[in-house]
Image (cartoon, rainbow, N blue to C red):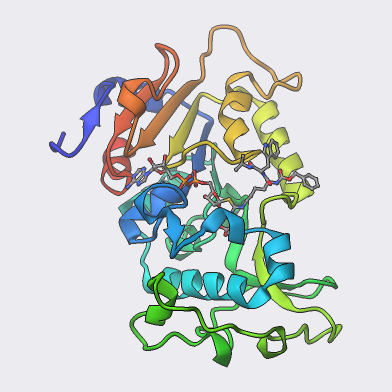
Length: 294
Ligand code: BV8
């Protein structure tokens, strides 16, 4: 185990549990993409300029100043397009190909799972995608829009990096008026907005039903909780829902235990996992997952 990784659990015991696991669930967060160079929400990269990303990822913020919110998303689209999937994304995609009983739930909107060719039937993007665009008013969507810049008023200063103004809190941000933002081509009245789930917005109901059904159908043997602070709901609840056999009359067969496996840069002193059946591995997911899932 390289010095940069502290294992609070034995890798061989983990591999033994993985080998006997039929149904495996992964819940992934921003830490999975840290090795691809994308900042997380919380932690050193979590603040975008002097704005807390969380206050920008809301319908109210978009209503109040769509230009500012679009600059935030144009910057994240630009960064995500420049980023590449890291070995952890490929390890999860490979696990899906090897294990039909594996389902990956991701909070990430950077499209890196898709670019790592993760089988779509075994991937649920809980919070949508930076590259899906939709209308604020009608049901129009553009599911795969990689325009960068998204529109002329949101152009970064140069090809290889967004405008310095976006990054340097000291530089006043140019105000982008609503009129310069693209309107919906269908209804002509709504604005085009990022196809992500903002705080205070509901996740896709059918997707949530499918997840509940997948968890309840059969005992989940292992939950991989990768690079997430577990602070955003309902994503934060899926690991315990799986442990309790779906919680909704799930078939919890006697004797089988669900192991929750936490992979995180900070395992809060090793208490990052709960019971003796659980595992904790502290370090970079980009380095850890390929070793754990080999
Ligand atoms: C909803 C898209 C209901 C936008 C995002 C209980 C139930 C339901 C809702 C709530 C509830 N309690 C509170 C709520 C409200 C709210 C919520 O959870 N608030 C929190 C802040 C308390 N939830 C919602 O609003 C959700 N909506 O449930 O609506 C409803 C029902 C009907 C009708 C109307 C409404 C919607 C939540 C979705 C928000 N959108 N993303 C965008 O991205 O711009 S969430 C956003 O935060 C990202 O998706 C991000 O992934 C996510 C969560 O953060 P993490 O992924 O965990 O990232 P974070 O930075 O926090 O942590 C990174 C971790 O990685 C750290 O632990 C770090 O140590 C680790 N790490 C760092 N580097 C590495 C690493 N690990 C490994 N390797 C490394 N190299």
